[in-house]
Length: 112
Image 1 (cartoon, rainbow, N blue to C red):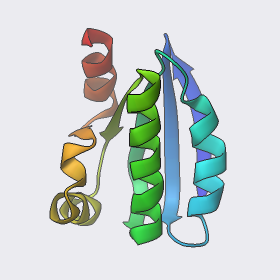
Image 2: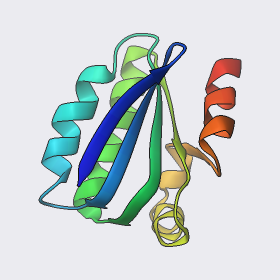
Image 3: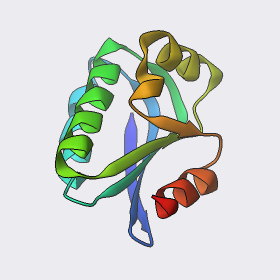
């Protein structure tokens, strides 16, 4: 797994490439949670994440809770069909809104 962080305007864009599983979720947690601050806006680009395990879902849940606690906002972008199905089956579609493109996700956060 590789995590790339960029910024567009005041929005942090975190791109996850590879698998978000028991081995890699610890790395994701250490790299993403520090970006969650009051008023932070995050887009997690999952376009190149081809697998997510329960450990990966747990990290996303932690990020979502931290965003809520800090008053920040976060959305997901470019979910593969498999990852989207997992998110919907486990109820994660209620934690994070998702958008088909990165631009749509960024525009949604700009409006909030």
